[in-house]
Image: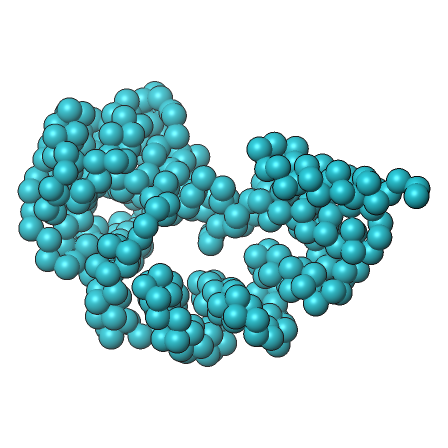
Length: 364
């Protein structure tokens, strides 16, 4: 066998079939570790020819993932989740990539949701007992891959295979409750993990505890200031900006600090542009919005995190339209709203705003 797909599931019947359908043409086996489903997930796995392993959930993602790795027989492992899809590709492409490859692993492209830009993730590596996950949540395999790469003198490559994640829609309360104690325990072990702090804050906010979420983000921001080399620190800054802004707070100093630490981060450009818009600094907002519209999406860094691509198009055009309307530049505002409408034809609001701007442009 050349390639084994390894995944863990629990009550993923709503998404599992599409995942398995996307990988079946290019993998030689599918290992599904079920940690206690009460829905049709096991039956769906069988329908797609997967090897099903029932394994009790032990509040440890690494434990379950490593069960799948232990069972895999292929020369290579594709690590995928049930709520992800492999973009269409052919077995010839995969065989050409992996057969006689010198690499110990490949990073492939992951699109975190349907509207975000992709970034590179470690998802494809040699089936090697030295490569195993660690961590109860946000389990990591990268350190093991890097150790094997160094020990064996094999490079780590990148490829054009693309995964798209579809699992952040709908009510996340069940997952938040499951993840909360795991995140607290993992942070007790890794107090400097900025991504886990950011995730803890999102879980707390999702469960309605905004006060503790803000405290967690404030601590994360302080840590990020001491660790400017860690790109995940920007997540704490952006979430804290949003939380405080949603409550009507002043975020100018926080945004300025974030821009100083992460000058190239385009999400911070967007947050500052919309903050300037809210403060009626329309000309300054337009400068940042024009800069966002000028961004070449193909030039976005592949090291993550991803961006909502609408800030480089639809959303930026709408915000420009608002700024131009307030400046009484009605013809330009109408053009901006029309540009947003072309990118989202189903949005009636854009058409209404364009019509209102054109109406204001007509002489009395």
